[in-house]
Amino acid sequence: MIPVNDPSRQNQALRSELAAAVDVVLDHGKFIGGPEVGEFEEAFRAWTGAADAVGVANGTDALRLMLQAGGVGPGDEVLVPDFTMIATPEAVLQLGATPVLVEVLPGTYGIDPDAAAEAVTDRTRAALVVSLFGNPCPVPALPDTVTVYEDACQAHGASIDGAMVGTLGAAGGFSFFPAKNLGGIGDGGMVVTMDPDLGERIRKLRNHGRTAQYEHDRWGWNSRLDTIQAAALLVKLRHLDAGTARRQAIAALYRDRFAELDLELPVIVDGGISVSNLFVVACDDRDRLRDRLAAKGVGSAVHYELPLHRQPALAGRAVGPPRPETTARICSRVLSLPCFPELTDAEVDQVAEAVVDALSSP
Image (cartoon, rainbow, N blue to C red; front, side, top):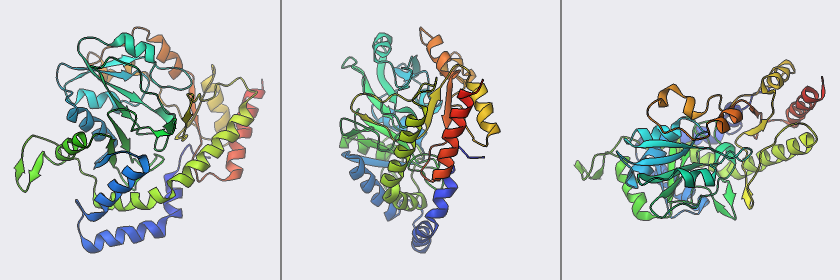
């Protein structure tokens, strides 16, 4: 079965480089706060074009810490798309704030700017927009009282008009979960920002509010990017642009092969560049397509089967969208196809042929 993603293929290809990097850490023994952490933060900052970058333990922590550093807390409302991973509203709930779920646009799967503007109340403190599946999401025009942050956890390198996602709002959170475009050999995350003061607050919050040895000027969290992950990510960052180009080539081939099918393809906003973390199509009989692909040895996945307004964990904790059928319809139609750099040309062709055959046969 051709998998939707397989991080082990990349790890095997880079095994000698990764092993050498980890060996250096084993030798110096600075597993927390070792030199590789600062080196990776600087390398990632420069790669994104941000003013500051702060490594943290995972992508969810990246979202929570940047919101907290920006002042989000109990009593506040934060706009969140209704179609995304539950980690996005989870970061809001962890701060005692209320997620307000907003419709998204089919095809781009980014937050609907008109719906976001309609959802603003006098309690709205922030908006957390998501560049989902590697597709860039523009920052919506909202009142000056609403600070816009970015969940860029699936979109390393996506951009709009030459500016990388993560740098379009007050701050952006990234995940280095192994399945991401830049994935570690464990977990990890990063916040980037154009505001060095915000970055410094996040730097304190990730380490128990520490200002000096055994001195803390605020309560914080234990959310540090460990040195082994930083070392591995330094290796992988060197290969990221080549991997992105391969993802984009696969996505372009799919677009060409699927152009005449009754299939909705990903939509990229004007001036945007997608990095195709996933290649997500949509059709009315999604489950039939998925079954036919499996019969031909092609794996697929559904991201995501439930809109957030129907997640049991958010019942009574989030404000639902006024038009819940919008996201419910999207969830019933989307299907993720294999799209990662280590797919062989033969596998890509097999995926394309299987989709064409599945949708061309009665």
